[in-house]
Image (cartoon, rainbow, N blue to C red; front, side):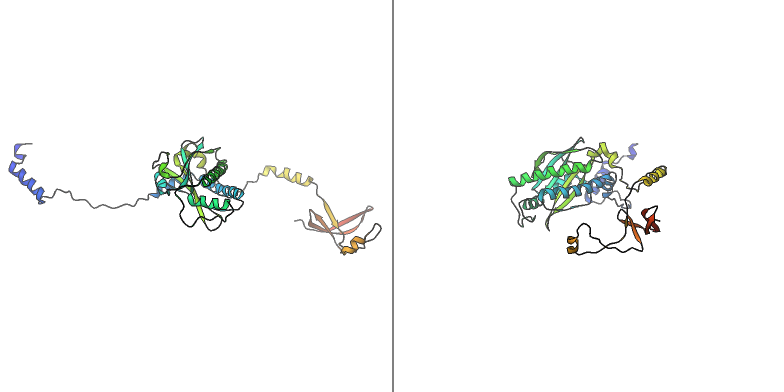
Length: 322
């Protein structure tokens, strides 16, 4: 660069003064751009679609939880599962109220920890039903901590439902859900909190009109080792018939023994007449036009009563077989 290309001191001072006063525009004009929509739920949807058998687990757990709670509380509840969803772990924890029953759990032998949550309202409903009430939550807010009785019942219900969760998973993997620790305030959790995606399964439980919720919050990364088993959608198809077995089945069926009954007639008697019957009495019957022949209580044939080769016999006149 030559000296002629350099600005003089007077030109530099004038340029600086112009920038400070706003006479010189220093901003680069922005080009016209086009905004593109981004679906933030698309990643969450892909996570759920990659583990389709979790939906089966949710359905099995709903049925099992209904039966287990009914047995424990001597009254059948209504358990309704909400659609599975995904969110950040920290988002879920921040959404919890300051009082709830939080169990930090493991799912042996899977890595990592997960959360099992009983909302305070659900716990109040269960306590009320356990002690003979209808299963109603109190109308007004309770204290900021659970009573010893509520704590004990929460522990019993949590252990009960975790056993049912293991059964719901048994067709996929042999898992053992266990509780590491329990907390009442989300702020006191020792679980490392991150924004890694978690799968949330929510179940609403009620005996009458009041309903409370429990949540299973499962990190997506926890299922990495069994992802291939959860990725197989359960496809229930009609069984295929194997033609090779048809002759053997037909042969065995033709050799099966059944009881054949031929009813000649039916007579109506009073209770008094039946009580008066003694050995030697004769009950008159009419010679039927048609004899009903039954197999297993089902009418298959009609026939005529007679004698063949010196034996009483029935001649088949009509068949109900196709």
